[in-house]
Image 1 (cartoon, rainbow, N blue to C red):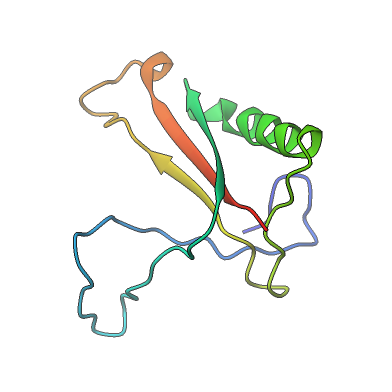
Image 2 (tube, rainbow, N blue to C red):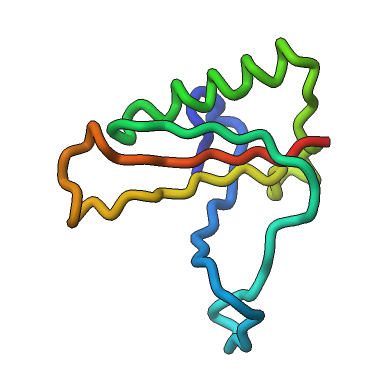
Length: 107
């Protein structure tokens, strides 16, 4: 996966599901958690094609307010950046009502 506008960088997206307690896994599934720390967050309401703009606004807010994102660990593993899709599209097919929360780990 290449981040938008930066085809020389590679990311490794993950998919996760919240659970109430740590789960045993079989190797194909990895049990993991987000690192402790402070996160900058934003809520995007609308179609997913507007999420890039929401990320840009989050970056702008961080810059204007002197907030630093957690450093990238290495060329493969990025700092924690999460999109959480709140709305069930099948129950709510109107994209203008879809909610997405974005979280970025701060340094």
